[in-house]
Length: 219
Image (cartoon, rainbow, N blue to C red; front, side, top):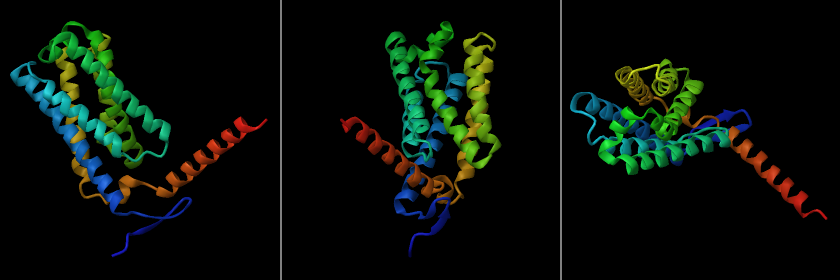
């Protein structure tokens, strides 16, 4: 059976087995991120703030994998989200080294400025939410995009108490889970997007690189 062919802005393209594997990997990674975030918040709410680091580790890994397989037309935007993820991971490691893995939540409670360390990790997740809203106009996606910065920046600025922040993040994590479940029946082509645009942008990038090389080699 041949791969389906679509008509893109810059010509026809097909969705092959590799595309389908990448989409499945992206969706599963995003689902794991939603489950890990909910698990972290439920444990924090009902069983205390000790030993949350396994959930945070799983969340960070899932976001990183989702960013590996996500399809975004603009490469600088994709790389920017990956940079935010990396900065957030480094910040979480610094926090863990400073407070101990089991004391990270308590450190956040005592010193709100630690939000600046781990915040980029959640900014990357909010970026994924924005991409999903931009592509599919899903209300739950805009909820993910807006609730994360409102919760974390509100807590950082002292406008929100810890309990309110946790409630907003729990709502965001639930919306993320809804978003993931609604993606299950969608065809892979929906997440891949218009591959002719990717090819066109890559061609423009290569032409720009050749032009720069020619200028540098000119006498």
